[in-house]
Figure 1 (cartoon, rainbow, N blue to C red):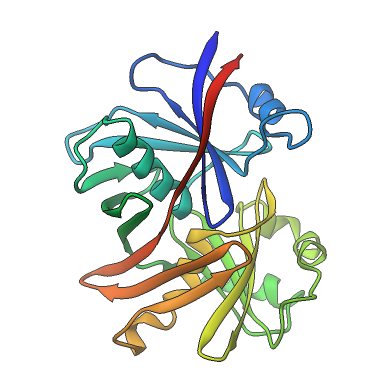
Figure 2: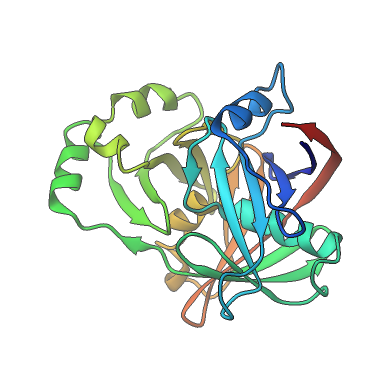
Length: 261
């Protein structure tokens, strides 16, 4: 079966996007792992599948699959790229659309040809005493656990540039890893917040929108302007907005092609 795809990225967080609106595509875990290989396949952080809506409350249903074939619950950068993909291919008029992920609805608006704004509900602070106690046994720096459809462990550090992030992730207890938690470390310097993220099922990525959102959510209510979160791949801007948080950032089309399942 031939599958048409497009490759996109947001701040270096890269995706293969497939259209499941016109024809139902059965994508297997084996197939995802094969094409995600950066040496022998296309290479990507996540595969995104765009489907028809499941009810009248949204315009499209979006699924995310990690490079290891596991299904992800949320990806902010992925949602922004999916919105740009939908507008580029004229699946919807170039105006506000509501995209449904596995957990929440997200409204997306085009700013220009390569930038998207989104309004997302504020991440929920995870106050589970057992989870927090378990993390404290490994991490001594200040941290918080969040949920925004997926779980994020955000650790504040004095310096993140040379820190071995993968080693820290591997030291997390299995009980924490089983929650499919993503691990982020961040520092505040010169009025900017810099971040690095190790994504469950992917590894360290150049950018993670939902991790950046969780970190930014700690500061958006304290400032009137935008909070800038800088990753290795680029920057995202966050601002307190009505009952949620407004996110602004770029999306980039790379190329398109066909795959044989």
